Amino acid sequence: GENVEQHPSTLSVQEGDSAVIKCTYSDSASNYFPWYKQELGKGPQLIIDIRSNVGEKKDQRIAVTLNKTAKHFSLHITETQPEDSAVYFCAPGYTGTASKLTFGTGTRLQVTL
Amino acid sequence: ETGVTQSPTHLIKTRGQQVTLRCSSQSGHNTVSWYQQALGQGPQFIFQYYREEENGRGNFPPRFSGLQFPNYSSELNVNALELDDSALYLCASSGGTGGSITGELFFGEGSRLTVL
Image (cartoon, rainbow over all chains, first blue to last red):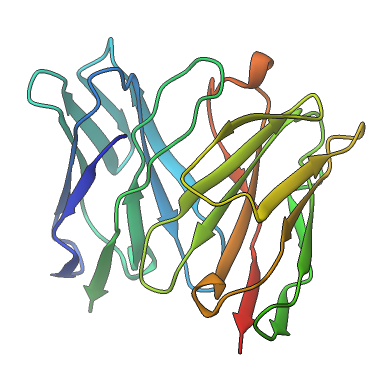
């Protein structure tokens, strides 16, 4: 099965700084690489995803970079705001029948004023 | 557009009992996946349903079972509850064909189960 590791487990940044979270995975068949944000008392929500034929994707303050050779992908948040405070999960997976996502253990991001 | 809804939101059971959790998928989505999220952990895949059949299963024992109905809603049943079954159970729907993930999973807010 897929082994997923996420670092760091906690991250505290000042408002306006950047935050980077790294995810490593083991299954070379993985071809779909999303990041989910989970706020307290809510289910995870997709914030950005990337597929294996793309190296980088950006959506306003959020970007994801993928290194398929090294089997890792990273979430980059620039100009952090207090509302970015949440738990972030990487969840590599694959498209196809009986597909599923394997979630990492999460990174708790705290953005301080 | 109605999102994913789950019921009940909270429940308390004792060891050995059985529980049924319910999920209504987002309008137009034909695939439902269930995840277990223990406190402080990431969600773990239990199983996925597509066209009323199980279409993939994670590392969970047979006492975890499910159903999907013609309207794509779903149930998760857990028999012979154990203390370690205490967790947040998340349902997610998606619109991929053939049960494949072609994009975003839409999660409900979960059912928090406490086993005493």
